Image (tube, rainbow, N blue to C red):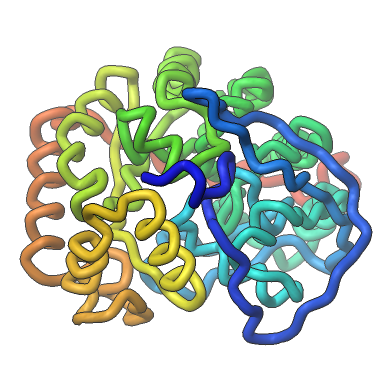
Length: 357
C-alpha cells in the first residue's frame, strides 16, 4: 500500500457523485476515536453533525431476508467508516455522497426517544422486536455525546418492549445496567459484529471501530451478565477474511456468544465504486482477485439485489463459506442457541389508566 495514496483514518477514499442531488449545511463538529499507527497522520477533515427532525422513527422492514420486522436508526451516516457498509447508499437520499460524506456528515435524530414512545403507546401497536441499528450503528461515536440510544433503551424498558441491538462498538457497555434490566424479562438480544481477528485487517476495513480485543471483551461482559449475544461474522469477503471463519467462530464461542450469523459481502449501488477504489489503493496486489471472487458470488456482478441470494451469495466460493459456517456451528455452538424475545409484557398504557377497561 502506498501511504501517500490513502486518506488515513477513513474508510472511503473518495466522494462519489450523488445520484439524486447535493447540498451542504453548516454542521457541528465531533469525533471519538481512530488508531494512528506507524506514524501515519489521520484524515484532518472533521466529522460534522446535523440535527434532523423526522416524523417517525420506527420503520417496517419489507425485505424477506434481513431477519427483522422493524428497525429504527438514531443516526444516519456512520463515523465507523466500514468500507463495505450497505447503509452508505441511504446517505444519498439525504443529499450527501455515499463515500466520505457518509463518514463525515452524521445526521442526528435527537427526538428519537419521544418518537419511539409515541409509537409504543399507540392502541393498535402490537409488540414485535424493534432492531436498533438496522441501518447505521446506534453506538457509533456520536452516541457518546448525544445519548440517544440510552434514552431509547429507557423507553423500551418502561414499556417492557423487546429490542434487538446491532453494534461493533464497546460503548454499549456504558448501558449495561439498562441491558441487564431488559434481559431479566427476555426483552433484549445483542448482535456484535466481528469481521476479523486481525487488527491490521480491521484498521483498513473498519478504521474507526472498536478494536477486536475490546469487541471480544464486550461479548464476554455482556454474556457474563446474562445478556444474550449473537456474533455476526459479517460480511465475509473472499480472500480478505474468508479464511478466518472457523477462528472467528471459536473466539465468539469462547467469549460467551450463543450463536453466530454471517453474510457474503455485496456491493450495491455506489458501494461498488467506493469499494473498488479503496481496494485498489489499499490492497493493489490482490484487488482484481478479490473483486472477481465477489462477482463470482453474485452472478458475475458486484451488485446483487435478488431476495434470497443477495445476502448469502451463490457459486463455489459462497458454498465453501456456507460449509465453513455450518461446520463452525456444529463444532463450537452445538449446545448453544439464542433466546426468543418476549413480546407478551408490552404495556402501551404504562400507568394503568386504561387497564380497567
